[in-house]
Amino acid sequence: MKMKRIVYADNAATTKLDKLAFEEMTPYLLNEYGNPSQPYSFSRRVRKAISDARQSIAHNINANPDEIYFTSGGTESNNWAIQSMFSTTKKSNHMITSEIEHHAVLHTCESLVNQRVNVTYLAVDRYGLVDLNALATALSNDTGLVSIMLANNEIGTINPIQELARVVHQKQGVLFHTDAVQAVGHIPINVKALDVDFLSASAHKFNGPKGVGFLYIKKGISINPYMHGGSQEFGKRAGTENVAGIVGMATALQNNVEIMLSVEKKLIDLEKKFMEELKNYGIKFMQNGASKKIAGNINLSFEGVDGELILHRLDLLGVSISTGSACNSNNTRLSHVIRAIGVPENYANGSVRISFGKDNSVEDVLYIASAIQKIISTCS
Ligand code: PLP
Image 1 (cartoon, rainbow, N blue to C red):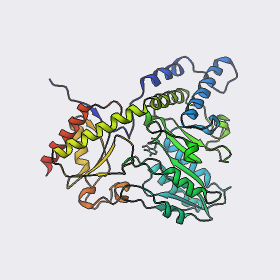
Image 2: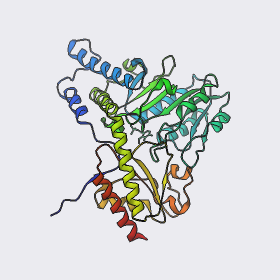
Image 3: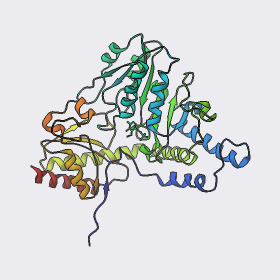
Image 4: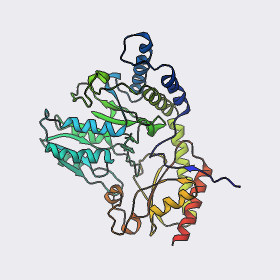
């Protein structure tokens, strides 16, 4: 019997754990199990592993080690940065974000209503880019924080964070957070050059383990503790550390940084091949996202076809991808990103995200393109 081909092409959702990261993590799951907060030498080794990981991560984003705070992932990092800025001790009551942020940002912003914080949601253009002038206009004397994502998870668009931060910092006292979950480990990150005050990252998006991430908080910024209890994470985020996760995250980031350029080139080539194949099949589609985007993250809208149907039919053929829309007749479940960038109605419901990663091959690309061709030809 012929084995079904399995092709994973949803690397923007999560990535395969790096083998070296797994190996580096293992001792901290089996033998080096001391509580990092204890004073004896059995625990001191574990404490050093955390400290080394903090140093390595800091080095890879050009931060100082004491600016790296370990969290449970991107969601927590986003929640922390945003919520703490509007706690009762802070005077500002206005925040600015964009319409295409991840729900970890958007829903956190919605929760600020309880603290009487007004939120401005900036529109984006057809490519998912935030307008610098619109940001400048939205800033007011009440604004405390601006949160704009570095790279969008659905369409891969990379926003000009350095320029956006410059606009924000022209207004005294306003802080800038970026959700860089889709960017860290995929493109070079330099927090000093970006001039951000907070940056969120998540290990499982860059071949690290799930359930661990970090928040970069620029030195000198006073931020309220997120979790109350012990004195871990400089007294700001209590709780015994996820030691193996932290070690695995640092190793995965280091490895991804080392091979970043060659992986990017490979992904650009795979993407080119994929687009050529689809065009050769004569399939009608639009590609979403800006020209400056995360390599391998491909968001396509097919005319007159349901994206959900494509996803499920591909699944039957062993292919894992994601959909930008979960359609129904009145569009109420259309992805907020696809809606915000204004994909025409006859294409919007046919939106899917295919995100290739470093383990994908040309054969994977050809297989998915041919599978899409078959699905579309039987649907139209
Ligand atoms: N922000 C973005 C842009 C994401 O893509 C994700 C995950 O999909 C998150 C935040 C949430 O990260 P985590 O899964 O680590 O909570």
